[in-house]
Structures are given as C-alpha cells and as structure tokens.
Image (cartoon, rainbow, N blue to C red; front, side, top):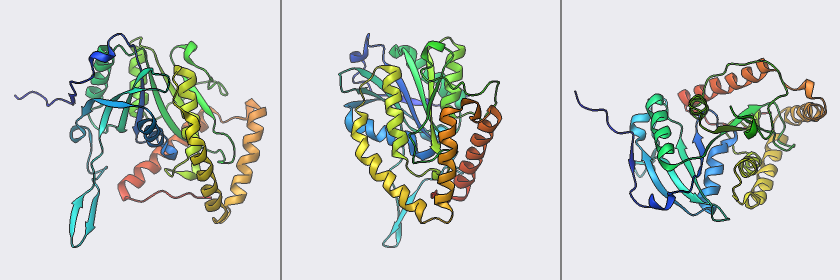
Length: 305
C-alpha cells in the first residue's frame, strides 16, 4: 500500500532566521467564519504592509472538496482559461517594529481536518510558536453604523482581553477549521485564543472594512504586534459610504438599520439584554447554512436590508 501523499511542501529558505524567535501564529482562513470578508481583508493588508516570505505551501488538491468549492474559469474569445489558483500558505512576516510573526493565509481546509490539524501543530512546535490566534467574522444583528464589537476567548483566562461574558451557560456550534484547531491546541496545553468580530448580518460575505480594522487592532492588543491598522481607516470610510448608499437604496433598509442601532445602543449599556447563548448559536448556524447554500448554488452575496 502506498504512503499517503504529503499535505505540504517546505520552502527551504528563511527557516534559520526564525531560530529563537518564538513567533505568534495568526490564522486567516477564508471559509465559513468569514463574514464581511474579514480574513481576506486582513490578509491583504498584511501582505501589502508587512515584509513576508512563504515557509510552507499546503496541497489544496488534497484539502478541497471540488464539488463544493469549484475552480473558477474565464471565458473569452471562444475558449476557457483558468484563473489564478487559490493557495494555502504559511508566511513568515515582519511587523512595523521588526518583530517576526507567522500567518496562515488561504482557503479553509474542507477535507482531512485531522491530518491538517496535526500538520499545523507539528509545524508550530518546530517553529517555536508561542501563541496561535484564530480570527473569525461572525454574522450578528448589529448595524454597520456602530463600531464593530470584538470578543476574545481562550482556555487561558489571561489571554481573554474582552471576555465574551454577556451570557451564562454553554452553547454548541458547528466548527470552523480555525476553531477546531483552537480546541485541539487547548487540549494539548498550548497557548491559543480566538478573536471574533461581530459583522452586520445583512452584509453576508460582502466586504466590511471596519471589521478588518477592528480585527487588526485586537490582534495588536493581544499579541503586541504593530500591524499599521491606521492605514485601513480611509478605505473603511469609503466602504462605509458604499454600504450607506446600498442600504438607502434597499427597501426597508434604513428602517432595519435604525432598529439595529437602537438595540445596539441598549446592549452597550444593559449587558443583560445581550443575545443569549442559544441566540448566538442560532445566528451562527443560520450563517453556516446560508454559506453552504450559496456555495452549492454559486450565488453571490449582496447586502440586504
């Protein structure tokens, strides 16, 4: 029986530079937990502003269910051509202060989760990762006209900067790959945390740059990195104006946003009125179901009122 094909290949250059660095690993996986295009926006910002080099390339052919994530083709002049293929790459990056960190960027694995998790755990141990941070965009009933809410969670209470403690009890939700990896690392006693940004549910997978800006600020606060989030402010303002225009042109859009604003403002002062655990779980399950439906049908995402 032949051996299983390797999940990744290493770039031999640059590994020696990481000796003794004890870097942070940030997971930026585009998939079910990517409301507002959160991870792609953050990844785009980091790749533009942080010097980087690839360390590891994962074999997406092994990790992709093509019936659910079909390759895209361009049709022009009577024939098809392939578009650039997505990649899942582990980068070594340098922040504005010269500190080295790692970022896993690309599509969320769809297959072989246990093997992929084991591979990332092994790579992290070899690279001396001191903290793994999973970033997620969660669709919530919040307005785009208010600052995004950011919550952190971790098996280590010292890592929870903004406790998601507005409800009591437990909840069960379908896992994203990053959350699953976070759970495995926690079971192994490794330092890990999640950063969740609440994205207006009516944006779906449309870009919400303010959420990406909030995510960068949260990563900075939790990891001590300098990621130049201020360079996204102008783009966030332009994106806000575009969303304002789309909402205004949508039937009942302004009324819906007004209701969400009132609820948001009450939530900020009356902690007991925040969503319950069951409500949060239901919101996330609805988003995952919609994500799967759009993936199956090929529908795009457009803001709704």
